[in-house]
Length: 356
Ligand code: GLY
Ligand code: MN
Ligand code: MN
Image (cartoon, rainbow, N blue to C red; front, top):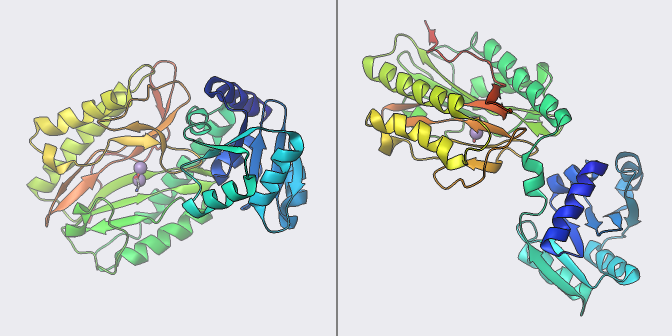
């Protein structure tokens, strides 16, 4: 955690920030180690203070020993302003993407004539490259998802509803070690598999369906995110065709990943393959995204992804084809960018699994 504070201070100095208020819970957790749900961190070149309420004072002392604790009794913005005054800060930067308009109004009122500066992307870029400890946690989160996938295959069959499968999968994730699901899982069967984000419904699955399962484990604060599409009964030619196109595109993108490539270049690899088979218009989302404390974070692997891949970044690779009223296929893996390429964390099979 101390190392993270050093990197944050370097970043603040680059951006010319005297004091930064970190309000976004995952950013605060990343910098301080404090996992509670309430509180904000205030950092300067010399100071590191966590402002929180009675419930968390002892927890902060335990989890964030390199931070001073400053307790507030109900008005956190007033406490932040008092602290700035006491310590003589002239200007306070706040995370513009994470405070509501109402909160900014309150902060500015409390700060009086002390300056407040909206800033963006201060902590987030630091989070993009994962240290060894983070990589180990995400590796385990991915392994938990793999184990749950293997088990859910035993339950997938015609006659079951999507919601039943989602419930079983949720339980299996926890049995395998997850703290919870990393997001509202997607179980989309038959024509619903053409909805890229078809959260589980009451639809009863039928023979002849493609079923897309997109889920992940939330484990020790970190997310995994995997998608597999399976067939219930023997797939028809079109289903087989789109499955193979997605599989080829997904594998090509995974194989292309290495440091130095921009997110959009990885996206291009998958998109070109899908385009070559005539399905470009049916692949309307980005190829992947960074994964960590949040399900979606930097870097983006999309046509507009400018971030350059570096060793230690963790990203998903998840192209898909969605044919309206017919069905869809998506395959998603999580990978760590390494010095020469990438390490694939999700190891579930990628050939078309046919459940008879
Ligand atoms: N279901 C969210 C994602 O795969 O990004
Ligand atoms: Mn996913
Ligand atoms: Mn994803």
